[in-house]
Image 1 (cartoon, helix red, strand yellow):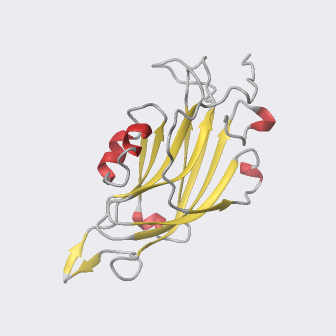
Image 2: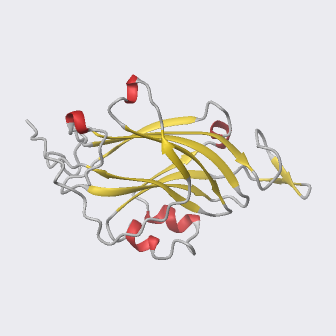
Image 3: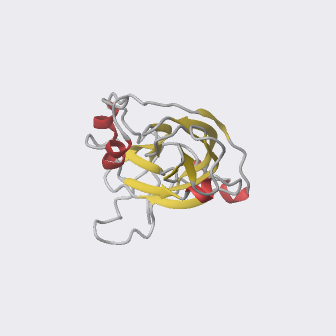
Length: 206
């Protein structure tokens, strides 16, 4: 039986500076996500730019072991990206764009999850303004490439992932990353949950 730790077992800030760059507000979710922290907003990304749009301190479960499936993952995150537009190359793309008469690549966008271990967010945050998309993706603990065809529609793209910590609670930083040559704009909804915390599961462990 897992013992639920009190919320006083918290993430340490470690002097981490968070680089946010989005319009953020609380979202109203349905019963499916009633126990999650709900965030929604919109953001714009310049060419090759990444922005942290949320941070959350996820719980840990010492019963989870390396090399084994974690039967009770302490953290869960659901993401929904929709209504994306390529604002640097004309109208929103539903097919190939053309720049100067030449076919251009579809915009490349990812969600990157970085944590508070030094070689993840703390290191890259020191040069965030100069870092390119590949620097952020390299520093991320998890990266999820997005389909432009899906996220540029009103329906969007939805996916779920679990966050497994085994030693202590950790801060996780959620960034939208563009590896495109044009400026982009998109909307997002996120549902973040500490699954072992019962009625407090929507609360960050800080």
